[in-house]
Amino acid sequence: MSAVRDLQGRLWAIVGGSSPLARAFAHRVAARGASVLLVGRDLDDLARTAADVSLRHQVEVLVHGCDLGDPDQVGLLARRLQSEAEAGRLDLLLAAAIMPSQAAMEADPALVPPLWQVNVTAPIDLLLRLAPAWQRAGRGTVVVVGSVAGDRGRLSNHLYGASKAALATFTAGFRNRMARAGVHVLTVKPGFLDTGMTWGLPGIFLPGQPDPVAGTILAAALNRKDVLYVPGFWWLILTILKHIPEPIFKRLKI
Image (tube, rainbow, N blue to C red; front, side, top):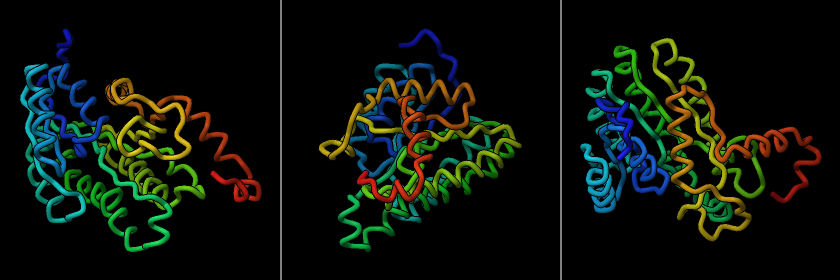
């Protein structure tokens, strides 16, 4: 266990709790004394992670089943979290997403609405429901995991990228709103991470490892950073990419 227990009394709700990044983040905050609520669809997997985190760090770790594809379940999750937000002890990591292939969605546009529901509508719905409680409490940290894919639409993944661009735009405005109440909102834009979502995909290079990435995210959140590219070199890559003139960019196969 970490000698620094500076997060005692905080509850970190981690949505998308089965992902490698979410598990690593759970260990990071628990090591510093925070209680954890793991949220996701696979209750068996969440329970295994909860038992491991609790045993290693001697903190309370609970689980909550929620499919972000079901708006009613998102509402139930919000109701569970509202009292914690009102009490001023709720922090939130939104790390859930789905990523059907670009080719699959082009072939079957019916795959696009579920993508939008999980990646955009559900996170926005949850945050809007919790916002008044956070504002009344005047305290809280929100970490929204987006993607570098949202910075510029590319041939290979512009449908997924569009969902992340929408989430980033909302998060920027939400950060402005919540800052007035003392609630901090961090937008995280990961590049490639070494996870099941990216395994075997073409074009993956220099993937970040979940544990050090989780540590970087937590440090950024505690230091009240607004936007984080992780690993950090992605800021330079995306800065270059965004400045390529459109007549040239549209001919690139990326």
